[in-house]
Image (cartoon, rainbow, N blue to C red; front, side, top):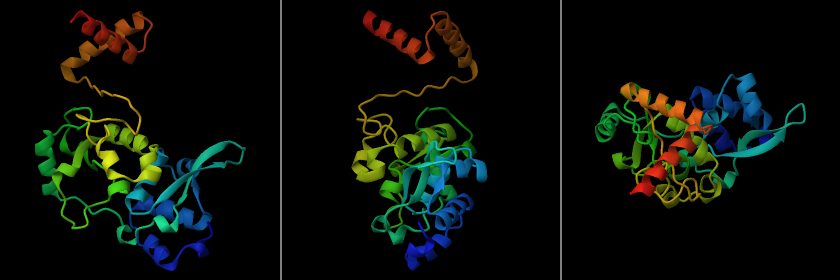
Length: 243
């Protein structure tokens, strides 16, 4: 996408983005029309390209994921700016920062645990996340946030949610917040789907003294020649049959 095709007001807003990673991605797309996952990893050292793309989207800049050929002819992913008609200039600049008091309120609600894997972490390892992705629902127009619209996630679950959401049709085209609210990633205790797929998921983490039980399960699954998830589901199914 040549630079001259970008509307001046939007170009000015793009240059106002201050986040380092988002700014790098934006400037590359302005110059070259798109940025590939190879560019992000090899040229800029970002090991997780979707995270870099998400930083741009969180700055209020819509991106489209496309396929391109690299120098060897291999098909790889790339990102370019979305259609100008999809842009909401009032959201350029992205989400506002969260206050210490806001995170303290969430820590009280979630008992310092990740909302997905229910694992307890030191507060600095828990990240505030919109239940409905920012790219779909944004922040409230009034500027007044409701704690119930947010959750705390560990970095691992946050990455998993990002990948799942970014590959969901409601993220790319639908943009319906109500659909997101009935997804596992927004309501892990009561949901209808995961990224529009009729599927159920349970994230389990073993910590401290529980690790011994995990290792025992691992040894037994290996003896049975089964992967851990398959073995654990078999144990659960066998137990349910006994009831």
